[in-house]
Length: 181
Image 1 (cartoon, rainbow, N blue to C red):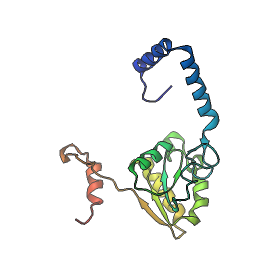
Image 2 (cartoon, rainbow, N blue to C red):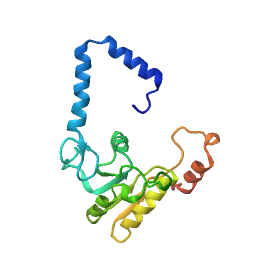
Image 3 (cartoon, rainbow, N blue to C red):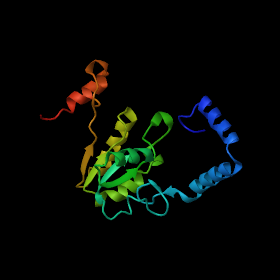
């Protein structure tokens, strides 16, 4: 039921719940119900929100003209941990994947297209995969008629990586995305 939790961990959690006082289980159950009742989707960017707008869209100190497009809500958390991006986000709800039956109409592309006229820089941060690249190309095409600077996250080798362990696609991406030193 929970991603990343296997059978053994689920068993340990189940036995733990049997050992704790009944009140603790009730508190957990109420917290889960509150989560479903009180947390929804931001009307602007589709991030998680406890109201019409998420904390990022509601923050007047953030730059709404710089928008980072991500596939999932958890990607927003990764960017926020980085602490360098001060713009807004747009959560697509996945990536285009014809094999899985996911088309642009299944994602939040319409609301992104409506936001484009107010955006100066669109940062595409979809996954480095065929589906992510397809999604990035679709988004770039949406923005092509407007004076929007469209950028894509660089790809390459992680910090501390050894070249001998890099696959060809990663090494090729790192090579083609090299910068002046």
